[in-house]
Image (cartoon, rainbow, N blue to C red; front, side, top):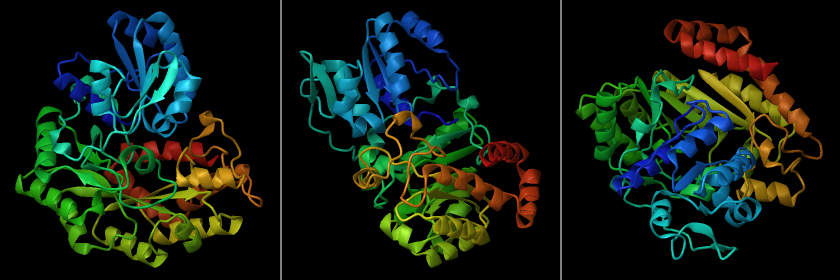
Length: 433
């Protein structure tokens, strides 16, 4: 269960402009639909903003329709799904507006003056759907207030790879790499990496350490190490201030930059999440990953040598996948031997290059958005069914974790982080059988 960081950024920005804001995370503070409707009715807001995604969109829209009947408010949807399909979202559901892309500025402007002339907004005008021009990305990220974590149930968020209680931090937005399947850079945050200053990031970390007492942090940037100079400067700022933090970040699987990795380690980084995706070079090339398997082997070996917990993710079902390449990927994962792994079926989110390719080639098993989640049967190929892909995920988990060579790693982690290990084990059993 992860904190809704961008929603809390928007809450903080609206609050900085004088608006009264409440944030309800119905996962961290469990609400049934009737309880949610009762809470909103009691607050009687002018606007209700839903952070939605592709698999949750239909459900969120149904709840929004019920809310519309109960409370006289305007309803706005934000997130990657409506950013990819703004007009379609507005035409199929009773929404007042959706925000395309980053939403702090566009949402605030819509709240203050409506849709006319507001960049980045798709809204209704005289019964018609109007899509305004997009808003340029925020370049000065230091200008944004820190997320409104005081509005969230911080003690309830959990990630089995991190130390509880934890939170997300954003060092920047966007990603310069060209992966065909990655959703956010293609529809929300852009193909460049815009960063906050190291000083601004350290100010936030210092405040969080002083105010909330988090035990670990995850830089939730798509690729925190994409800008080498920036990653090193953040680490150096953390060290210079004497901040003793446990944190993790996302990195490239082929990262062999010893100097940078050592600097991150010295600053308290203990976890690297890396997207390997496949053990077949042709599949990686088709997906525009931009690295060679040999470099991935070298990178993961170096990360482990420097003492990082390495979490490798693999996505089954990318174009070119066969029964043979699935076995190659499982074998490659075992060869890399990271601390933990994640296997899933790749999700072709709308308006990504992957989705367009699969749709054009008749490889989508369904276009029911409710099904667009990992380990669901979404993709099928002429010689590889959707059900086979889902079964391969379970087989991959069994082959990786239930092997004698992993016993040593498992015992070490049980000793060091028992709560994390048991959380992972429960998830593993659920996914494997």
